[in-house]
Amino acid sequence: MEIKITQQAAKHIRHGYPLLQKRDVLDSIQENQWLDFVDKQEKLVAKGYLGVQNNGVGWCLTTENRPLDHAFFVELFFQAKEKRYNYYQDERTDAFRLINGAGDHLGGMTIDKYGDFAVVSWYNQTLYNKQEEIIAAFTEVFPEIKGLYEKLRFPTEAAQSRLLRGVSAPEPLYIKENNLFYAIYLNEGLMTGIFLDQREVRDLFAAGFAKDQDVLNMFSYTGAFSVAAAAGGAKSTTSVDLAKRSRKKTKEQFAANRIDLSSQTIHVMDTFDYFKYARKKGLTFDCIILDPPSFARNKKRVFRVAKDYGELIEDSAAILNNQGIIMASSNAANVSSKKFQAMIETALQNQKVDYKLIKKFHLPRDFAVDPDYPTGNYLKVYFYRIEKS
Ligand code: SAH
Image 1 (tube, rainbow, N blue to C red):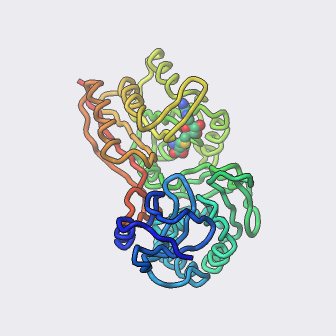
Image 2: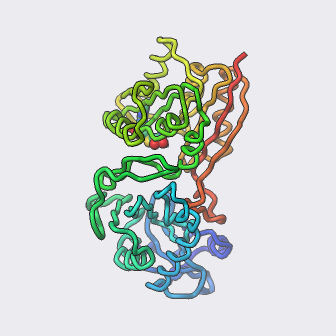
Image 3: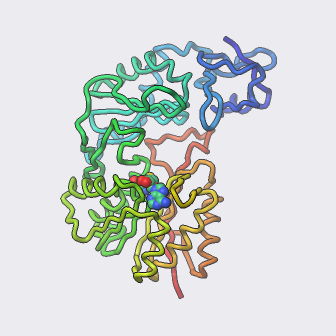
């Protein structure tokens, strides 16, 4: 089936841009089938599909005139696997991303490897309806995967998480990252216990970046950064997360690495309450890790990275030792690197401290980014050294 798009969109797509917005589509939006996108002269622009998701209404998979069939997906998965050859060779790490949506020419889905298992995430219904065909190609290219789970990340009545193929993973499943272990649960809602896109940042801590330091890990989730910092010789770690589950999960991660709990503190608490508590008690830190969700609502307030990140920075600067480090991280796709940096630096200026940006991380290579779709590189991790006069 053919569908007409605007000349403007046709131009961008011919240059490689993969995502379609509502305004780009001239005919009525037909979901749930593979489509040929054509220009005004009815010449083929790209092949793909329309499927509404949070950032657009459809994806172009190829500008070549070829069927989007089994052979197409097999080829695509082979290319993705080849791209990750170095990850397969690295015996210290067995969890990484296999398919990163548009970065692997397959906008609308991701697949992560956790040891011998994998998790596929679907971001729209249309691609999900092609599940059989896509998964058949996947299992052909990745026969070593013993069990495949799926997560449905679009509005649906169906279960958000389930085992799709093969055998169940142990609970927890211990994955290895840079020779540290993390306890993973592949069938507990949408999250698994670790965010693989932060691997290189954890590696930095594990290699001793915060050696002999007192580290505060805000929005700590399962404490992965605390584990890496402690393994890298941090004097103490303090993990703060509002979710009740975080205490048990964080202890489990420390235990998996035989890290003595006596220098590790875990608080189930709101971050902003913790800042007040720390000020009252006179607690200070050498390194503060800030990695909040893009958006969070609790009983007291709503937190949005795009509006409230500066407040986190100001509160952190207040309890940081001289020459201390703030690690400011965000995965908010709606906040550009430039805006993020400006928010942080304005807050530091408000606090009247001197600062130096000493390190920057974006997505690691397994989270492949399409150069024509740079907004796909949503991760920003900036390290600042703070000078207090
Ligand atoms: N930094 C973590 C991932 C954070 S996920 C890591 O690297 O693994 C976001 C976490 O923020 C969730 O665990 C959630 O419970 C927590 N959270 C959300 N709002 C919060 C708040 N106001 N105070 C403390 N934790 C919060």
